[in-house]
Image 1: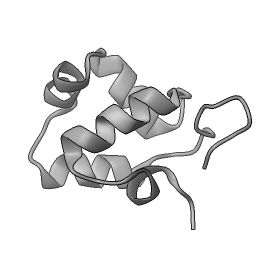
Image 2 (image 1 turned 45 degrees about the vertical axis):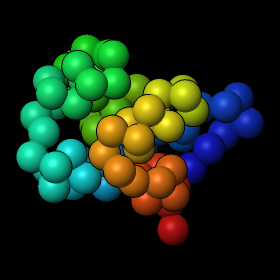
Image 3 (image 1 turned 180 degrees about the vertical axis):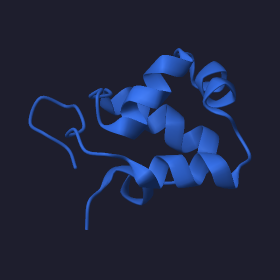
Length: 74
């Protein structure tokens, strides 16, 4: 779900959590690979942080997913 300011709308991101778990990454491991803190990944998964589109793209590349897979609500 993208908003007009270029960020992703806040919502609990269970898709991100599932994709991270499927790669067997901890929040810390994913955070290191995308260049943010573990707290940032946790906040995105809980819906408490509005990541930039660039961060979303980086997360998708690391997890081998598309933006639609992780961040688009159906």
